[in-house]
Image 1 (cartoon, rainbow, N blue to C red):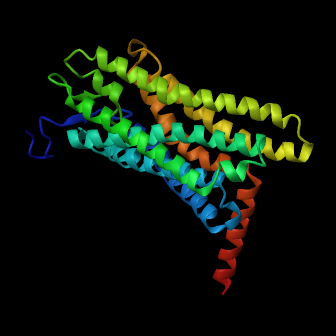
Image 2 (image 1 turned 45 degrees about the horizontal axis):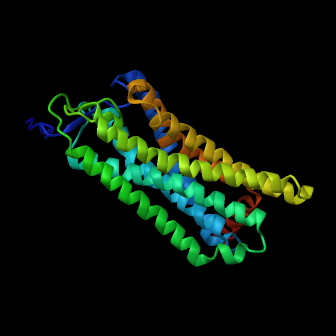
Image 3 (image 1 turned 90 degrees about the horizontal axis):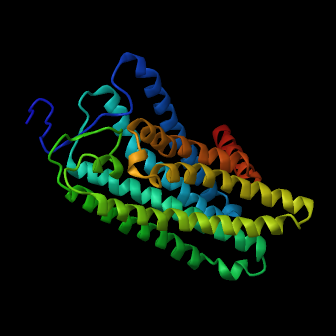
Length: 313
């Protein structure tokens, strides 16, 4: 045991995104700016939706959950990541590693399921507008969101417990900037083929099925939108294109990361893809949903006007 930095032999070592040199102060500053932008952008989006009563609809209810997930995901990863830029060694305890796995999987799977729920909401709103108040009530929204969080949490807890229960009798250096199941499996000295098969099946269920629901929903939406009048068509396309942009970014990164055989993984590729869905996507989500949404922009301008009046008084 090293008493100087309290590093136990049981601790894992995160190698980080980049090796520690002065040249890498620029990416550290970039990630810090992205961290601030993510927190401020998503928090502002939640505030606007909560303050403006015209946005108290199921679509924006689910959007609030998406913004909250992005905030949580960023808080789980970036503070530790920034500290690792400055501190050599980067130890993390098994409990801390398990917490990262559990929380990150909860946020990731929740977002995957939530995007499918949001596509269902848009499908009902556009293709069955008369039945929308009946099919998407406040209680149903709460039940759907609760199911998303509970399902994701149970799945994440299973993988976190199982991954940490594996024997690690060799190197404990994780070639990543946070604890992730594929990176941990490479360090285990036991046969992990069965568990890898379980992970693959889990990914098929939690990624391909929601993405299939989204594709089917938007295929129906597109056929309906093309038959609309130009004014309604533009509004529907603007809303749906924002959602589809987020879907393509999220599922593209997740499928590339988790749906490939382990033999095709490399630490460099995994870190770049993980950087995209843990830092880049949470920064872009509030921009996509605000800049391409007239209702959110109108509510934001209204909120800014209220603040200006308050400052003048």
